[in-house]
Image (cartoon, rainbow, N blue to C red):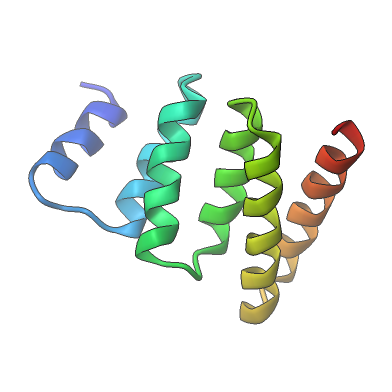
Length: 105
């Protein structure tokens, strides 16, 4: 049984929280399913709007899914969240990713 299967089983069993959704999103992204990853990561930030790592991963998933505009929005929100929380490294990384998207777009 894969990690995705285990996480999906937990979700089906009623465990729905930011960390589980983040973990699912991360694993779907590793498996090459950026759209499924984005859906779970969007749920992660709905559960916990201040989850800067989830915003960063959401931006990555949306970029890989081909939705540059939504990825830019996710990164912008993630930067605001990270700065407010004092998560300077995450904010710095998301600024780099956002700048790359803006140049490409």
